[in-house]
Length: 606
Image (cartoon, rainbow, N blue to C red; front, side):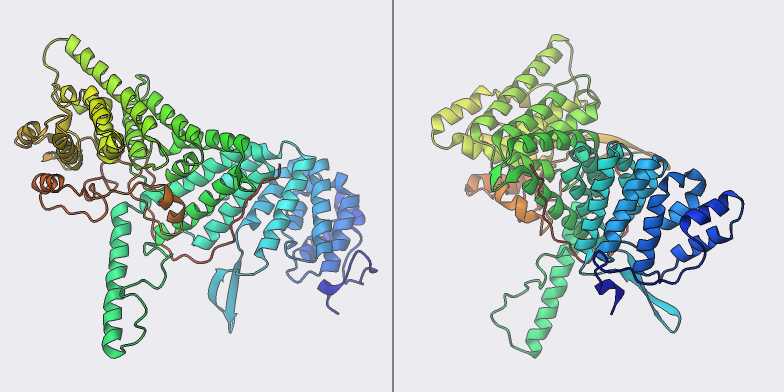
């Protein structure tokens, strides 16, 4: 009969082979300077073939003398903590947890070592495969018992927390330091993030810290997979698959029911870094959904708490990062749960934009987020859009008044008026997407509202915002406002085109003067979401760009945008792809294949 099949709680202990005396005797000899049994004990504990019965016997003896296991016995304790207990029989697991409880209660000096040991089990272990004494493979364990093993780790962590209330203070830096390198496989990253999110279900006080750790690592992935790189990878994959399908059709005219050129794995990203990010975004969005809903109903207190935590992480990590593509959608998704959250997010961005004490780069980023959020979020009603436009336009007019009151000629200077220009572009961008909703229902009142914004004064002011905004935005804005006779921009646009803005770039080779069509380094954070699996959370909430049906708008767009065509968004090819970076941007990553995915389910007990 196998040891693992025995019931250790109801059966007499098996005879085990061991050398040396009892643990108490061994410690006494060690104190007298006799190290022979002590070293023998460590050697037996480190035996990879150690049996369950041996582990239980030794753990029981260690528990009886835990008060003697001071820092002098550090190496012995580290040896015990390396004993493979996870995944063993229930008797071993329970005895090991009891030992950990006694150890951290009597010897808190070993608390961090215990925590590190548990966290080390948050990822699948490596399994080496050898043939003829040669290691031919070093892959991750795909044991189907991983969920059970992870659960045992969380039980141990909860038990330690019960005996040492300050555990969370020491746990957070360990979770940060133990995070797998982002080049690891999707499976490793998923398992670790899944376990970190599970920790927050029983240690809610560290929820914000855990989210900061996770988002910080995901941000490294996000900025390493630019929008253009992802699109190029998908395009290359699609072309290779279509070429393969054509070859197969020439040989075998079969499977006519399958759509031509349809990728076989619709949920897998062609770009390996994007694939890892997609897996983690799916998990994070599922966590947000599960945490905020109980039995299908929104849990107000949890949602508010999560919103505050995510907003803190947003301010600290995401807002200062230029040209992230996807991680910011965690707040987009959360805000869709209730209008009050969306309005609170907009108010937060507005406060940053209009605050002179904030760095200009953050004020400009806040304006970009504000305009992009208003334009793209389907769940924001027209009344909220109009209220935000009123705030923005009032601030812009006051800014113009302030420049006019100084006298003299106000120049078109981005370094001086950066927040002003980004606020103007936010209005233009919002009106491009939402003018139809503003005019719907009552065209007369809608036009009166647009005229009340006094956009003509904005576009004709001395600071000349049309000169620095993205050409795609100015051209589409000009076409729409011309159609409804709100403001006429083409004279200014044509004049500006004759005087392209020179920009000085400094580099190791010296300064060079070039023409920059994106002097604001414009960034629309809620441009189309490209990740496939996590995109299912976002798609129902997202306002995609719809080509105008009006022939006049199409003609104007064609004339003023030249040959740039776009199948899904009028900004294609004009938004930045990671160059001209402002603020904090992590280093780029190499690509690794991704595999596996644990089951996602997060619920916090009330």
